Length: 250
Image (cartoon, rainbow, N blue to C red; front, top):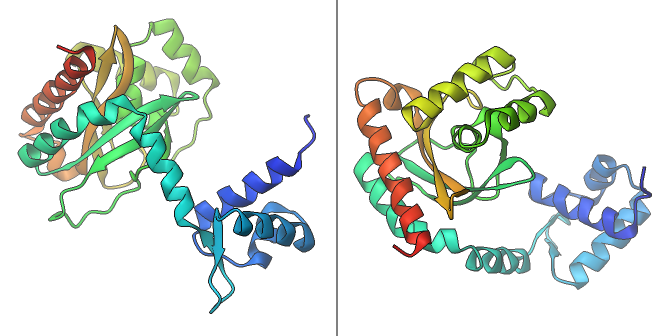
C-alpha cells in the first residue's frame, strides 16, 4: 500500500470539509484520524492558500470562494455543458421536472449541471458534483446499455453492491434484465433505486459514436411513472439526441 503523503492528507482534509460543510478542527481530526496538531498545520496551509476560511465567530472551517472559482473553470472547459444548457432549459419547461446533465469518470456518473424547476418542492441528492454508481442511476444505466453486454456485465460483477433502497439492483439477473429493457426501449429508468420516492428517466448523449454523457429528468416517482411516462421519455430522448447533434456540429 502506498505511503500517505502530506498532499494526500491535505486533500483528505479538504474533501472532508466539502462533505461536512462548516466544521471544527476537532471534528476534522477525528474524522481523518490525523493528530490535532497535524490537522491544524494542514488547515493553516489551506487557509493561507485561500482554499479554506475560518469563521472567527465560531472557529469553524469551511470551503472558500476560491474552490468555486476552480469549479467554474472546470465547467467552462466542458463543451457538453455549453451544448446542453439551452436544451435542458426547454426540457425543464416542457416536463416541469428537474433536468440533470452528467458526465462519466472512473465508472461513476458525475452530475455536472442541473436546471431545477423552482416551483417544485422536491429536493434531491442530485446536486452538481454528486457522484452515483452506474447501476443505481438512470443516467448510469443509459450509459451501460450503450456498452457491449460483456463490458456492462463485467462492470456489475466488480461494482460494490449497496442496497440504498429496497429497489436497488444488487442481483445480477435483475441488472441484466434492466439493461436489456433499456436497450430495447431506448431510455433508462430509475424507480427509486438510489433514493426513496425519487425516480428518473434518462438517455445517453453521444459524440463521435461514444457516450459523452447523459441527460435525465428527476422527480417524484409517482409523477414520472404512470400514464405520462412514454411522453416524458420521448422528450428526454429527443433532448439527448439534440445535444448529441450540437456536439457533432450538426
